[in-house]
Image (cartoon, rainbow, N blue to C red):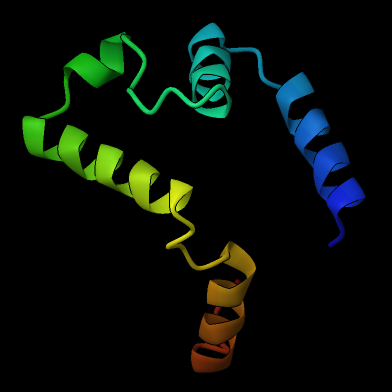
Length: 84
């Protein structure tokens, strides 16, 4: 998928989001704010869970992630009987 297709798909996904909290979280992330938004669900997380999420966001920002499609390709080969 090229850059143009990715941008179009991202625009479509954002246009379909109805939840203000989700939109705020996406905006904060894209703006470079790596803190979790203050919301009901975030306040219920343990300190370890928050640290794990923030560590994951930092790893993503550093490019230390495996693309979703690459993971699916691996697991489709490993588990062909599953509908992945």
